[in-house]
Amino acid sequence: MALERTLSIIKPDAVAKNVVGEIYSRFEKAGLKVAAARMKHLSRAEAEGFYAVHRERPFFNALVEFMISGPVMIQVLQGEGAVLKNRELMGATNPKDAAAGTIRADFADSIDANAVHGSDSLENAAIEVAYFFPATDVYTR
Ligand code: GDP
Ligand code: MG
Image (cartoon, rainbow, N blue to C red; front, side, top):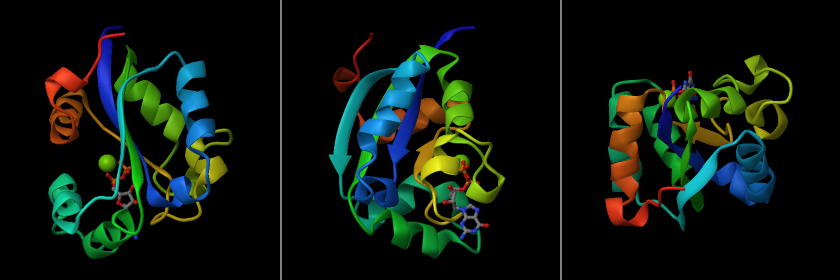
């Protein structure tokens, strides 16, 4: 497997629940290293731009409203197979379907407030990392 980078966001619900550290611990135990991080309260334009691929979906407005409801914790995770590894740690989009022991099974309340975002492909990971971090702010670890 190749060394990869992926973009992770701890969403407003999980930041409000004060489980940032617990979620970071899962990344670390899985061998993922934090290569960049920042807390940010997204503007509407930033959230809309980040989720532009979902613009035509019926849940788009609800998703944007939720993502700007409070600060988020944004990080770049680096490691072997980081994109898939992070998706496995996250669990299914709907926490009702998420496997036991995944972040969404343990911390998410609903499909709207589902605790974390993670890039779904290496190609999207590169786009999403660049959306939030200049290359000079991402550290090779
Ligand atoms: P993800 O990659 O697992 O986060 O899922 P998607 O990329 O398909 O969707 C992005 C985000 O939109 C999800 O994490 C959910 O917060 C939200 N979302 C997706 N599908 C639905 C839905 O059917 N209803 C609602 N309310 N939100 C959804
Ligand atoms: Mg997605």
